Image 1 (tube, rainbow, N blue to C red):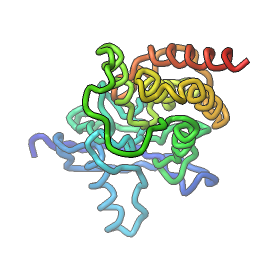
Image 2 (image 1 turned 30 degrees about the horizontal axis):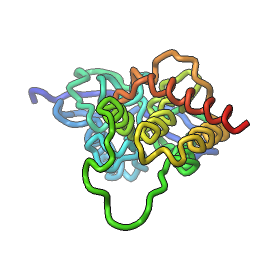
Image 3 (image 1 turned 180 degrees about the horizontal axis):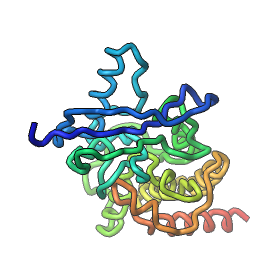
Length: 252
């Protein structure tokens, strides 16, 4: 059928974090070029279930590029080929008939494998819990525009807030650094009036928690920004460094 492809998948299979894993080869046929990458995996898993085999475990939820759960390393790239797309937004027309596609989980000490392609990213949650919040008075919401915010600050905060915490930055980094993620969360709040109360505490605590989780250091290769599906800028890392060192120096 025109527009359909036959592909060979080399998929990482691993029962749990402590088990030894390895690649398993699967042939998939009749894949429409209009399918998303996850829909292609649905076809494979339906076949595996019908054959009495264990389906490939992978994370997914919204399938709209919002939740950040669809973390797959595809042919050596987080979320696969294409710019500013998550795995669920990647369509099979990005490949061609007869292609061999290698699919792996995120590779980072701080992201232990749960099963197959699914990894535990709760380290990100602990970084947020360390300081990624604001203190506000309870009661009615403030009227719109009651807190004037410079447009440049609002735009930069909005861009930082676009981070979905998928972990592609960690997967792309040779050091498995989480600085792009952490800096986006710090920048988002540091740029807004509501974030000023915990500003210094936030930067210091979140950076300390990031290091505690075992993420590597940033060597400014830029791979994180290049592979980020939301295009989070490296400028956020520079801002985080300023926030952190300012907090450390002011506490002495």
